[in-house]
Image 1 (cartoon, rainbow, N blue to C red):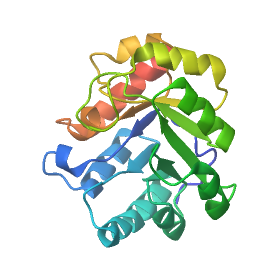
Image 2 (cartoon, one colour):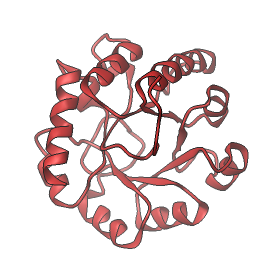
Image 3 (cartoon, one colour):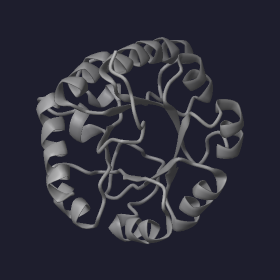
Length: 214
């Protein structure tokens, strides 16, 4: 097992999606993320039973702990707590941040998806450890997230918020330069990584470009 330090010390934030992984299981994707040097992973499967999600989260916790990776569970604060994940990521319609904090305690990372400046400021006020701003570009991954908010919203949020910010939504290697030029330094991705021909190589290239702009 590799000892962890800061659970928010990562640059690329891959998020799973089995239906976009071209027949590869989430665990196969995780192994490729580890091989590519990713330092974080979020388990997100909206169409899986809670029992299956829990079993998969247990396996993710074991592998990420061995690799010294930050492990975030999407939505399910009960699963997050049960498997001792590093954190949970909540959407605008999920469990309230303040109540999640009461259940999970101060040591658990809580992230929140935000789609406006008001939502971002509210998440900070409620005690989120990081926020995600998006979708930056059009995406099919989160069909209910609304229209693209663009990089201007990220700039507005960055000027008002001091906690870490991730950006997400339609980001790939073709438009990554534009995102980095806007000042983003932590990039959340789904299809651009889990759907890549070579996941490990794609992770390495994302990280190389991110670090070249830091």
